[in-house]
Length: 347
Image 1 (cartoon, rainbow, N blue to C red):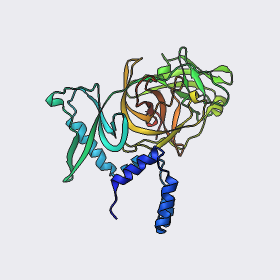
Image 2 (spheres, rainbow, N blue to C red):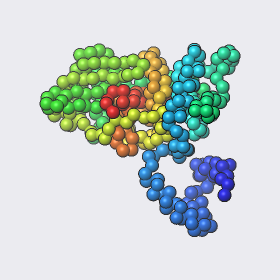
Image 3 (cartoon, helix red, strand yellow):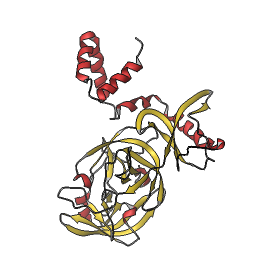
Image 4 (cartoon, helix red, strand yellow):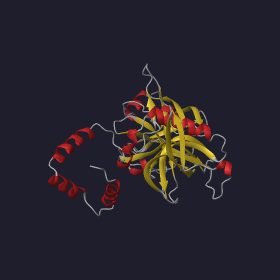
């Protein structure tokens, strides 16, 4: 039977809008074709092995990862001289702010221009030949978002993620590390909540602020935003730590996968989100700085005080640490930005 993409698309749209219910569709399908029940059981078994992902992005699994890497290398080489282009990465195309779920080469530009010089035109379709086969993908042009870092003051209650503060800013503890000899360990916090090395960092223990340690190294660049705190007491490490499985390095095509975090601004409750892009540039307007290759999540899901909060996948692998989000008063779409963990921690 020929697949009818048009009716499937309209049905999915009606389901998302609540005009048709999945239960009714399944009841009718089972009654019409008893073999559908067996097929559905097999699909449910397979579904248990899949990583949670936005439904409209499951189709990305059909692409060969090595081919995608070579296509991305080819497009970056071709457009390397275009001054308005900041970054090119795999993503999905946005049409009037709505994600259409189609794999596309996303061109992040400093600003969108109504009139573009002939030598700066970006084609709607990019074509390249790899191993004597022509590959073509749609392109999408997106202006760099102006985001805000999520340092700030929060007033936490009990049983929440650990709030930390420097001399002037507040954030969330990212990680702690025990020393092999059980002596003083180290901690990780967002670099932009600190101002200098040897700065005193404190953490909130119940209702009391206590010394965590002193900043040993601070790095705030286009690739990193992190500070290492030295001198953390071993008893505090045991109190503050939460084990994770391993550090996960995301691939460019791993779009739409489910992640979870526990922001202070949400009272430490689990927040579910999905990855919109695994490597995107962002401009933080208040501190007037760019960052490259950060993870972007759908929606503004963090607030002031959440900088540094760990982000996990559904198997408790660490993905990254919260940097900030688009301003609340910005028109949709809004995103949250995450520093990739593999840049800081060993995979």
